[in-house]
Image (cartoon, rainbow, N blue to C red; front, top):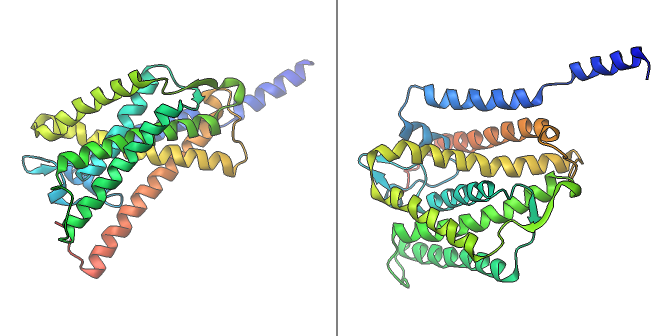
Length: 277
């Protein structure tokens, strides 16, 4: 290769957009904006997540006069989701894209069934019909957290298989056995202890944790969809290969969450519909 060719290649490399820096900047800017906005953590988190949950006060966990931005079931779903994915990340399952065993898949499916049963029972109680048992916020949280675990595993597998090149994937399942599910269950139980305990110092951390969980769910879906639209599925060989998609996915997640919240606020203002108690 001639010197001119090398210099030309170097110039082209220098001109490439710094998508990794852009992603870090966008993330830092959004965190700073949230923390510095002149409202309480409760007001900010409830406003951001207003379009993703009914946020019924009677179905929410309270910390003194502050309530969590999600209802009890959604707190379980999003909390269980983030805890499960953090566990998989901590165990080094970053590129594990194998399908779990039939036994694990069956248990994960039953988690969804459990939430479905509890959801139907809760709805029957809301419309004052005969119920199987008395609804309870702790049960809503537990069944939601079980479903959040299932959602986390399947979304983990989806992102691994859509984002990463087959040569960079690991054939092992992200959840290798019931020991993994037991470890996740213990972590969720500790989280549930904080959620139901009403300990005031824990409130800001839990509220921010739930906001992060909601953003992560939408982000993962958005980045997968973006790669499919760009016809770049299963192509990434390094994190830098995903940096531009990450910027687009995070931006899309913010647009979706804020749009949903804005539409709900607009609907409530124009129709004068009272929020559910």
